[in-house]
Length: 443
Image (cartoon, rainbow, N blue to C red; front, top):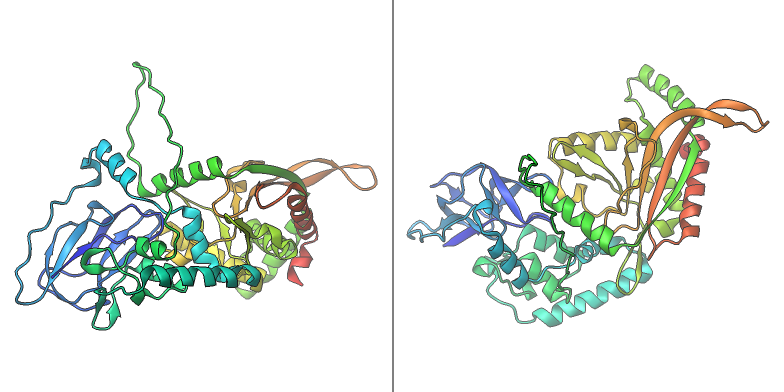
């Protein structure tokens, strides 16, 4: 007999909503069967079964929110009587004081360290080999002799635990699980790797509202809660600095117009301004790889591949889909992938690997008429590019004549622990060359 708990389907997930049950009480459940669809802070994902038997009882109904680790259903053998479940509480019914006490007792891994674990395989050889060797050794030493977490030869572990263990080259069969029935969860993997640490985030004190003020209380969605947490972490822990430039967008717009005319004749999709900006960033990162990095306690992690994130606005917040190995993709490939990822992001159908593990991010508010702005770095990345709109303004041309120019404002927001001012300026110089000579992107 085994209780099914709400799984942690992403690093930032603290609770989930059961969107739809795909099995009903009395159905036979095999290992690997999809039991339900779960809405997380980022997407709607499938929840697989890690036990076999018969679904005896469902504790949580469709549409109900429940905390990670709480029981949501029961699987048992044909002859077993279902045990009485522990009472399930909705998130909003738990007293705030109790939540604070529970959080104080439970150590939380640093978000940056979890991200670094995902990206270990992409780090420069000089960093990754030594790092992986240390992690693997620590994991084996911490977990030798683990038992009781296998079923029919298969190790019982959550999907996130499997993913983190795979990236960190840890053997799950040698890790002792602390979840229900000895199931291995992410915290067990991090503990085995010696990365179990506590992160203290400065609390935000709400100012009292005037007695005469009228306000609507809007509960935080899971996505908004994660955005708030990560942005506070970024601004409080990362020393930001900003470099602004204004580029001549005329050549890029001219090439875009010509390309779209040709694509229209062949039935291809149109290229957007943001497609050119994304491609230019990829090429600039290849030329200045120091920006394609992140900060670790003992080293700077410089990534071999460009996993390019771009911000997509949603009704409940935003998400940054990732174009993986973007350095190997053409302008048209980047354009097509960006459109497809944007559509699935708005439908909340992205997989975790499609929005986790980015190495650099582009945030473009040009479509909203914003000339220039400063973005907040998406940790653990070392930089983010904020892109404004193309505006017409008088400029002085090379023969000292005033003409109407089409100008594009950009701000590079950098982590000063990783990127110095000269390095950021060099990146923007390369970006200028590419935007103002866009045929270089096609070579």
